[in-house]
Image (cartoon, rainbow over all chains, first blue to last red):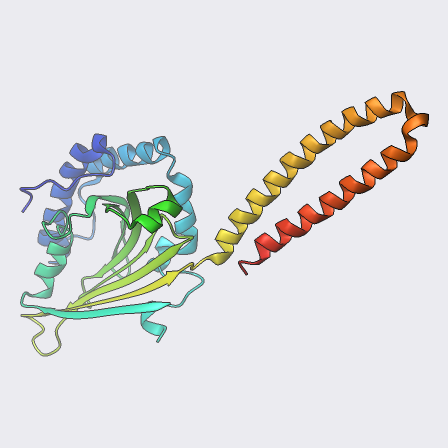
Length: 91
Length: 207
């Protein structure tokens, strides 16, 4: 894998994203799934990448859009929309 | 609201499928996905669930009738929150479009779990999407209403300034044209009422 690069929505963040993704994918397979480590070990790369993404969201005027979605479907509850029951319970 | 459902079995163990899931994009079949970003990621220390928030960027040509409404916007965004439970072996991903959601809302739930009949060899994939057109007619109505109010406010302000000058003019020869002014005001009020009625009608027609 990884022969085609997964890009960021902001081209200036793609390099940082790739470094973080590579680290995360190894951690996920070797440690997380194996139950060896619950600590994300890619912290430093994560902060580099995240800083880039956060700045890009501000620069492109996308913060409000994302924040509204977060209010509608909070991260803490796994992204289930507040005004709607889960699709699996809707039938 | 329309519900879309699909199921599939992958001939790979759950661990491999869940790992490949993070590397799903780019792939040659999903060319509409041009970017995947991680916005937040945490491991719950108690449940051991890995929770991830992603921003998925799509570029896809849209039908002409729609581009007429949205103004040729080609790039769209989807926010996804996923949960990987390594103990119970499940992946659940919930996503919703961030753009154009006052016209069309797509809420999708994807799950990957081991196939009960071959839990170490096969993975069950389920996909369910609720697609709602004008999910938020209220949002659209609000937009139209806001536009209506802005336009009304703009016209009202201009109307006042215009009327100010008319009044100034008229007051200079008040006595002679008193009757004419009263008529003028009555006509203006009548027009205003008509406009108000029309705005109301136009706005509430959507309900």
